[in-house]
Image (cartoon, rainbow, N blue to C red; front, side, top):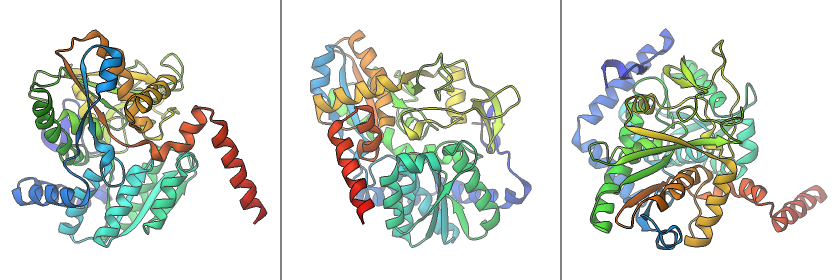
Length: 409
């Protein structure tokens, strides 16, 4: 990394003048925390007592036998409190908010897991909380909206633009400009202006630090390849961070949607459709038109349809350290079904993207090889989308009956 948050040519801090002092305060708080060993110790202790860390490593014995190639291990971030890796970053930023003496937090969310994690953190630390969520995501992630509100957060439905994650981010920044004195924006992924990409990656690196030790203990060797889904990039950076100095191939899997040959996908680094640009405070690859206007994206997974990507991952693509692939919606549903039936694991739709690519490549490797998949979240939140994708008649009948019941009331 170079000065001011650049990773090669990507990153930076392109912010309005009114936010400069707020960002300087955040940069200083982050740098102080990073240089203070007691902060990381406090963070690890908090995550151990509050969120099931270290999360376990599961040997997927049945899937290994099914594919007949490499041994498959799964890092179980779905077993975190709130059901995903998001809580790692959120609780760490909560400790920073305490250090800065602020009393209100705001956040954006797509799949809803970051919103639930932020609302949970706010409840624990006693902060007031507002979460911005696109109208499309509110509709497909209603259970998470319910929990955010029960946890005490105000959920603001964003009805402008494409009504998904990028629009929620825009609204959160507008809020921050108005309320920066007492408010911290808990950005949920490794994107945005400096220090967010670096800070979120650092807090999520607890995943890779644990996984490296665990896979050595379980298999006696480092993995040949590790796989993580990529939306903004926080879970991928978290897992990859444990293996950057090793001879391990790192594979990020983006949302292929209805196919890379269509316009209905969200692949920035595995397709030729994204171009360099500056938006939402930083430089990276964006899915945009020739005039720099952001294009609509699509994914069956609400957390992967972001129009940009972490500037750190953009640089790692350019240097060749990380390989990027894309999984289509149909492949994701198929991999999810197989994982449930073979292992009793229910990955989130986001996480299932990583399983797709691992399943494609496992048979090509030998039984001496080890591959590691990050199950970044659990699929409970996706029940409506998954049931629709499976065209489950029993579920449809249940929903219709519930609707009739509420209409009768």
